[in-house]
Amino acid sequence: MSPIGVFDSGYGGLTILREIRRRLPQYDYLYLGDNARAPYGTRSFDVVYDFTLQAVRRLFDEGCPLVILACNTASAKALRSIQQRDLPHIDPTRRVLGVIIPTVEALDDISSTRHVGVVATPGTINSHSYAIETAKLYPDISMAEVACPMWVPLIENNEAAGDGADYFVKKYCDEMLAKDPEIDTLLLGCTHYPLLMEKIRAYMPSDIRILPQGELVAESLADYLRRHPEMETRLSKTGEARYLTTENPEKFDTLATLFLDTPVASTRIHLD
Ligand code: DGL
Image 1 (cartoon, rainbow, N blue to C red):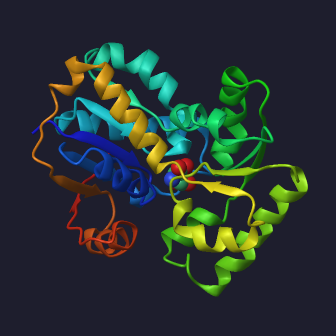
Image 2 (image 1 turned 90 degrees about the vertical axis):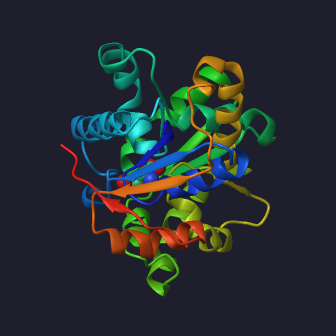
């Protein structure tokens, strides 16, 4: 088997996997959630880089020729170093792709006020990756950034639908509207956040579009595979998905089922 590897600190990458499988059902997928060490969003640059590299190596060892970092925090803090510094030594024929550039690329067609907001983990926001990449591609778009440190812990603890979540969803939505009242698009720059969609929708004005990344990343991957037949032909195609977690597999399976709406049976692994 030569599956496409999909990595996230926890469950969030499942929102990306779900859309990728919907768009590209023919391939095999191997998902790895580093749930035992999640969340990554408040960890330092070096730690996120070390953990992400361990995960990528593991997915390579499992036979993945291509790995998607379905985590904005890892994409912001580790992707460039892994692509430029590590891949040439590990195996120059394999590829690691992230989620930030495919998301930013889609903004041109989406925003008419040219004011976009991004909500993400403190790690992603402090890296300013969204603002930097947007300024490179579309200098006329202004990007307002708000860190939401409490959202991932709420989701990882299965509290996304609970009453307690309302307080923190409203808090960061209000912060965004105060920062830039002209935004017409709110980008969910963390793969966990689609699980809070209903509540975010309730606290944002109805004319602001809320944009999750899954479909954008799936479309960009489809385009990448069209442009890279040398990679496409290496991938196995039986339509299977397997799941690895660094936490208790029963716990993973219960919450993963919420993200995917389909039963999941994971295997526990250790990363180092
Ligand atoms: N889901 C991840 C992201 O997209 C990170 C969540 C976390 O571990 O803090 O940023």
